[in-house]
Length: 403
Image (cartoon, rainbow, N blue to C red):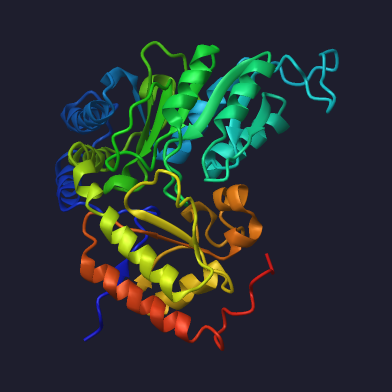
């Protein structure tokens, strides 16, 4: 009989709820029509889609009319940031430029290297395209956005158009000072977009933002569906064109089956934060054991406020991906950083931004969830003990300093 596998990669994706699976199966049987069709089959599919919109709106404290369904958090982030650049004329040789040759009359996007690639790489693309100018904000030593640098940027930039920041870092679990940052930006007339993908259903954070993104599979719904939640009256511009779905902001047929799963997960997430809070002692137990058995190990973002279910540790003398592979052989599923960077040989970007490439290259992330038990944590500790004990002669040693 094979031993139970331990899943500690909830930040990458969460195991789907039984209620979400049941709702999707029912929708696949009864609501499989095209939601845009006016006949009975289409109306049944449309009802599934609108139920999801209403559930997300309730979770977010918003009006259903301000919820745009997307394929997930990445598309939602793209939609929020790309809307900033619509109407820009692109590069113009007659424009005033700064010392680096960048046009001064472009909208300014404020963000940092802590962000998920679906924000950071979109920011880079907007600057390459001449649609925006990006000011990269500093990262403080605790893994949070440097608020003093944000204040400085807001004072110095003539057109602070948008601040894009996350609420909870996917790699480290560090809770960002989103309320304070959003208040500073909004006071200067800048829009605020919050990548809230890792927040929904886990924490209850209070802040004001113009747009917020979510992905169903991060809070036990299906993959392939998410949403952008906007403040009332905010003008958004589509990234894609070709259809009138989602008021023309997201053309393409909405999946009523995925929508049914999203609705179930969103309803569950309304009551979930209390269940996730119980994970903090398990996280602390796991961290304490790993720090004790591996001298030199450091918790990324340890002094900062963190989500209760995530620990990210730099493990000197190890390559993060190889440590993950060794643990996988011992029955523990975890990761070296964001799932969107997996297989790219790039170290975790947020860890690198805060503590350097060396720490990032040796980082392992363990993220728990509602079904994680004390026995799971103890099994993970034993798996680490086995792997680390053979590390001196194992394949992972010797990688320190190569990043």
